[in-house]
Length: 375
Image 1 (tube, rainbow, N blue to C red):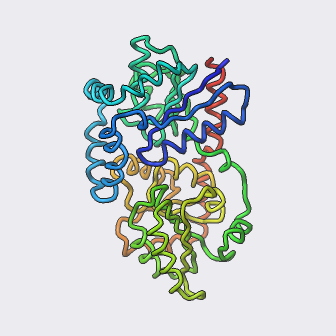
Image 2: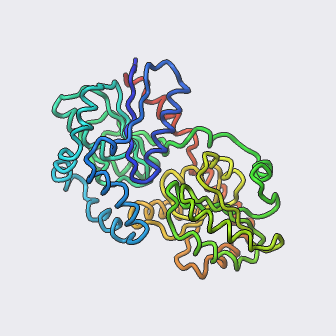
Image 3: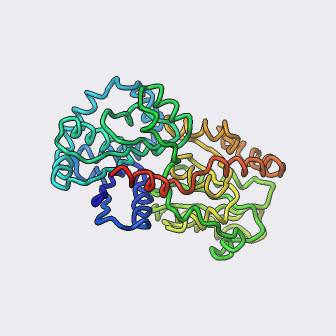
């Protein structure tokens, strides 16, 4: 029986952490374990390394998104750069290695490639005996997720399973689970009731605009582009922890007349995203792995704008291929594209059905049930 589970994420973006939290919640719902611990790997690395991995990454995404995109493509050759990358990681993660050797969990579950690589190396050296599961938190599998020592991979879609198999990963070590999201997203909640609960108009098309947990992105430009919509709509603008952005949008909202075609409702950091998604018809923004999976669970059509080159570009490809999303590459045409979609209820209903078809709302529970027998 598994007695100690160690969940390892990395706060380079909010998604890896949210995925680990979803697994933690699912484990606790199952019960019977002595201990489930969630650790941000970056808290056990050098200060400079931590800054590069988290703060610098977010700055680049905001100001120079083509740079992380270039790195994503440059290092996406399977097995090519693993020795140099591992040497750098080992140099900067000594406190993390110490944690693993002292804690000695029965099962290690990684929602980020950094800890997965270190755990694989320690297993190869027989310095730890823990079993390792790796949960890929995007729809594609980048080369940095590849390890030699593990018990199970969990991936989002069948194509990712096929890719890993082509690289020599045994089929019985790959599970197509979907990306783990909070189990609360699997619960149905009435759209009208959720709108009324959160002070939204019950009869307007509702667009959820998310800047992510860190409140990044050109949200004001997106909102300005939506003011020319011909359909009556309300924009639920999730500002995350960006209080300055919320204040600016609140000021903007007060200048909009109640009978205007487009209303704006700014919301700060929230733990009720499942309810706000249940209240919405579409989600507009960047298709990160977790946000996309949450939106699919609620049957939301995704309106993709300015995806981060690399992983979000590839997530976009899968959504577009499944006809569960539209993409706008030029903000001046955003309102036109939305109006065109909303004017075609048959197409819109089909896209919502496609979103539900891609959804894996029970991924966290399914992953836990798969891991329990591995002990």
